[in-house]
Image 1: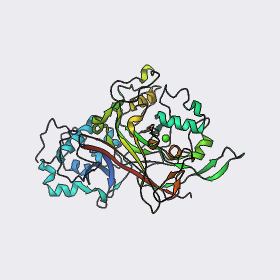
Image 2 (image 1 turned 60 degrees about the vertical axis):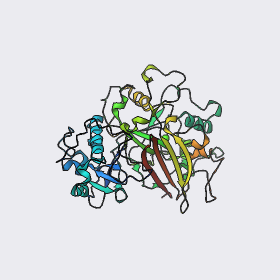
Image 3 (image 1 turned 180 degrees about the horizontal axis):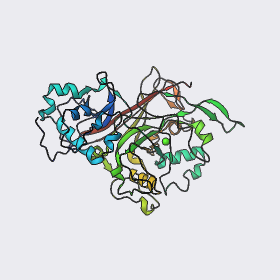
Image 4 (image 1 turned 90 degrees about the vertical axis):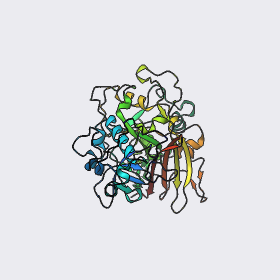
Length: 432
Ligand code: CA
């Protein structure tokens, strides 16, 4: 078997080209190579793959046929499982080696897979013929609240415009423990939740389908290493624990949330569903897109200090697609706007000794910028219903209606390379 010998191969090199068809503006050039779990008609059991152009590379098949030999992987085929947890548990270095090896196999001048029809039959699937699944088993899910613009907007609407930020907000990355069981992959419809709400003018609460259903534009990182209960992870160590990122839509019922959230925080207004994009874009692939975070004032406590560029320049877009209508772009934001970076989030999460799990998910909180077009929720875009959004079919939205589809897309772009996340897209179904 011919083996590639590119020892110093750099998978992020913008000059790399591949023999696989990569459509213009594809989210998945050879410099990306995100990991996911897919199935198709030939191999019904979900297992691991990598996205490239309009194809999915079957990692279980590559491993089985010896094309991932020499990377120090265990004998057990970790790619044959229906989640990436076993693979991620091998650590970030193992994942980097696999990504580098797959990059070599896909290089324009490497014939190993390119000229092996039998292997291509076994290990390549057209992306439009596969079904994507949850990439990981999520045991625990945490939602942060790390956008100062979002926290200020919500504080102004829900509490007091003059004291929108609570006194702790600039001192620690506020978060809460969410519900992991209802995190679902893109394409899974979301049923409108029912619950209690009480409008300010009413004396008594009412019960029924939420009338203020909303999305939240977020990104989430996934951990691949355990720290052990009682141990903390410093901001400097945090990145050893972070495998990669997905897009995250944290569906929210604002009327239920507003009535229930004091004194203990979000509950039924949030736990009915969260949707993610199915491909995990690795931190490795995002390295070229590191950038500065907003300045933090006042200075944070020593355990939250970070050095260097800890934010990522990732463009974020939200589209609303009414039933039978067109897609309307309603928001354009950026991941780099976040006040608190992921290193700080993870250090704060574990400073008390909380143990992290493999496959656990940590959402950023709604990512809003200062421009009203960058607000990452309907609550903010339509300012609590006082400024309805106009759609191209002439209809208006204060919040989401049954039949609406919300689609989020994200990409980092530079040096002619686009590292995309694909999309998270879900339709709202009527309450049951
Ligand atoms: Ca949220």
